[in-house]
Length: 117
Image (tube, rainbow, N blue to C red):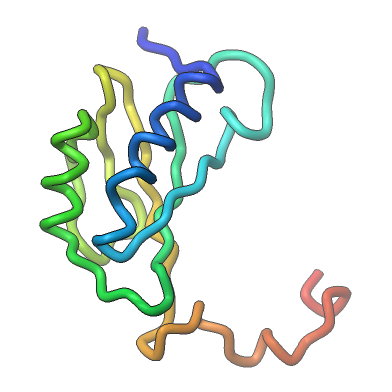
């Protein structure tokens, strides 16, 4: 079984972040590699839009393949895309945002924090 450690995940995120901004995204590490101690079975990463950029899905995956992140399963518009980096599993989560470039805030943006709980 292949396992990830936090240092490897951070190195992967740095490599991804070095190539994806021109395609309209930034990257963030999440999941067990960020929140828990010890090795994990996969790496969870978030892709989020750069507010003023237009995304280029196909171009981004071509650039990611060049640095070693291979898309295995999933298409544009999906929440989770399965991928592999250096033979290790990666779950790529795409943060949804609104058509107007916002992060989909509507009724919730007028609620207080305690009301959201």
